[in-house]
Length: 228
Image (cartoon, rainbow, N blue to C red; front, top):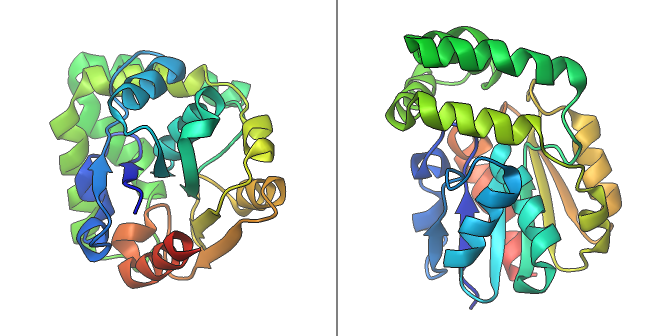
């Protein structure tokens, strides 16, 4: 049974996956944080350096972008791929311009304000328990402004990875929350189209973080993906 490498989203840690890792027993789960570099290529290289020779790979949001970079660098090592609430395209110019303002504000001591005002309101479905938002804030503040800066720059300067997805032929899952405001449906339709062997799952009642918002539905999709 291949080990499973999980990569969480921006300013998240292993807690973002909720009870999913334990529920996937006996699969060996390896948590990899996207913090080991200042570019997407460096972050992917750092995770690959510590990863098993061959593994299943799942990433959410920034974690999915890192997973696609890993796929581009080492396609022979990735046996299965799950991409959740993410985007295979390079960042648009208008979003790139906003990054600098967010970075300056975070480095000036207002990371909490950046997360509260500009990012977290877009993370969750309207009906999601407030405890999930509290957890998101705690994860972000635990990682701190320097990690926010590095991750923001890596996301700003990332490459389009649609070609890497089109070349992948292993079992694949593309999953999104139906109320995701950060990574819209068309990005997931694109990834699903690039990997016709993939299963597309849209989780009702979830926003950007289905593992925390709708854990049962997310677990069911993971179990199906890992069994194929």
